[in-house]
Length: 333
Image (cartoon, rainbow, N blue to C red; front, side):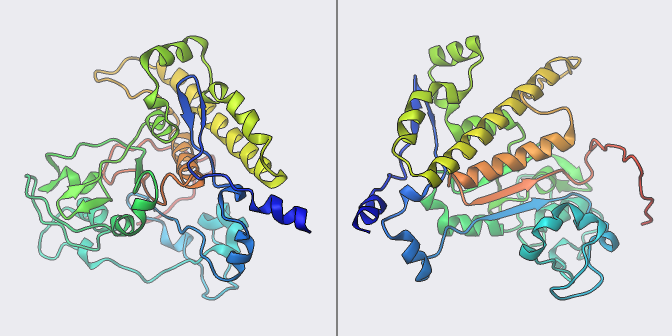
């Protein structure tokens, strides 16, 4: 019993990173990073980190195929909810909600701009296409103000469709309203990142590589994990079985994300050159792009890089890439 307690007291600093040849990679939360007797503390009521993510789907949802027909814990999964059926016991499906700030309120057309800008602010945007934009602080940023100082990044903003923040995008409403759901202040939107490679490097430190190391890595086409392999082996020798499993799963997911980004870059390289510079690492397939961004968001949560995230899957009234369904279900509006 005494030997077990001695091993339990062995701890690992939360600030430990895997390093090698100028590269560094963050670690997921391991049991060794918590104080001794953390399990007992948990039973006594110590709270685990709370995380919050908001995903925005443009132009709404087919509600009659989304909302369960009955209320209560025994509700039946609908067609649109089937992909998350495995998590049924952990889901709460809310209905009967509305945002009055998204209504016209005498401002005329501009539903798309109002839909996005009021989504997390619940505020009615000032109708302008100039610099005097104003809507409200979004709920993700209110949360970031409360817990953002506990992580490397107060919040993470992602998107699958790029968009400018100036000019008129919807019937006299500024493009900032249409292209942002996260607002740091009533007049300051948080631009979202569209490029998975940029998000990956921001999270895992590749952007900090010196030019010589970056060139060497590109030359040999190495994974960032190759640079920290020696540090990884050394760390694994000091971990218990549970932490080794967590670390193995995390490193596997990092490498798998890397491979998908590399695949996307190769596919993008074969496309005809557009008139403007094409972002590197954006998958050709929209669904894969969305999945990749979701996986990056999960990785950010796993490493406790941030606890707050927003993902604007698409922009309202944008020329979206729509994939044809094998057996489309006709709908009426």
